[in-house]
Structures are given as structure tokens and as C-alpha cells.
Amino acid sequence: MGVFDGWLMLLLYWASLALTAWAFIDALIRPASGYVAAGKLSKPGWAAITGLALLIIFWQKTPMSLLGLPAVIAAIVYLVDVRPAVGGLQRGNSNW
Image 1: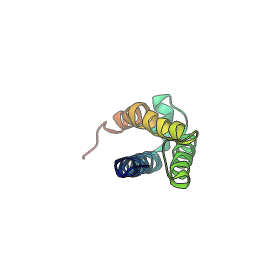
Image 2 (image 1 turned 60 degrees about the vertical axis):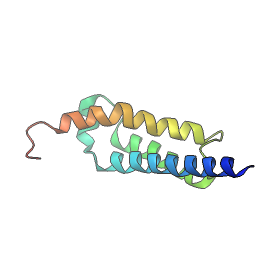
Image 3 (image 1 turned 180 degrees about the horizontal axis):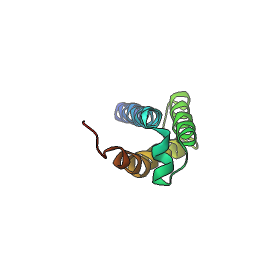
């Protein structure tokens, strides 16, 4: 593998690790009632999916593998679909 390929794979690894870690931490800090109110899978379900995605990326050391790609896709689905739905319900009458 060339130098460019090595750097590209390293960049993909760190980016996918950061993405899955963000999804996992976000799934943990959201209130469980928000998932139910939004009609999404439960909080433990999304925490398990994103946590498993994080572990897969960490252990495989590459997102470009048979298990790595679905792990990244699961984190993206959480961040694009579930997070806005659950976060939109929290805004309500908050002082923040």
C-alpha cells in the first residue's frame, strides 16, 4: 500500500471511530421517553446498536470491512434519523 493509501485509510478509521463514538454518546444522553414519543426503537436498542458499531470499528481498525460498513451505516442512520426526531421533542419549554 502506498503512502497516500495508508494516510487515507488512517483518516477513514479515525473519522468513522469519531462518528460512531458521537452516535453512541448521543444515544446514551438522550432521555428514554424521547425515543418512545418519537416512535423510534427504544433507548437501550439504539445504545446497543451504536455501542456495537463503535466496538466493531475499534476492533477491526478499518471501516472498509464486512462488518465495518454496516457499523458506520448504523451510526449514520442514528445521527440522521433518530437524533433529530428525539432532539426535536426535547426543545419544548426549555430554558436552554
